[in-house]
Length: 191
Image (cartoon, rainbow, N blue to C red):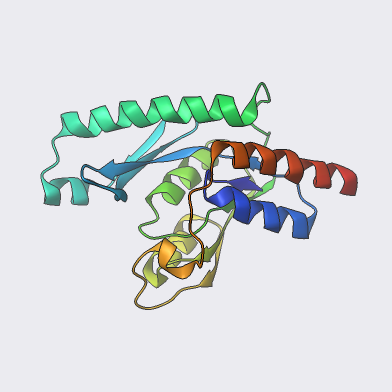
């Protein structure tokens, strides 16, 4: 089970607990549109993989130099989070295994898409996307990219991920670290 931090970690923790499965993080950072950072024009992931939605970039007239600056900033934050969340632990070996990628929801799907593409380079046997909520179109798109996608709720109209939560407060780095420690301790007991 690999969670997309930060919001995917509390969701993955509950799924990992229910499945008695180990969990870790797969760090992905959204490349937000300047002034509308929650709207993704792309994303970067562990290993330096970058996906940019050229259609959005062209439509909004975002210069390539700005995309590169935003990418550099997000790669720095990605590296900081990798160090903070993993300490000295290496990325789990996923080669030949089924990996469940978990996030708190899918709006554009940019971060999940780059996570899938970066994870494929590590040669898992299967990639399953699992989220509590997603736009119907994005959930269908993930089914084409991953080996399977499970989207518990796909409301129409969708609006935004946070609209489907009673409490959508930001998950902190400290909460991520605590959930990772707790999630792996219950999996160790089950093994």
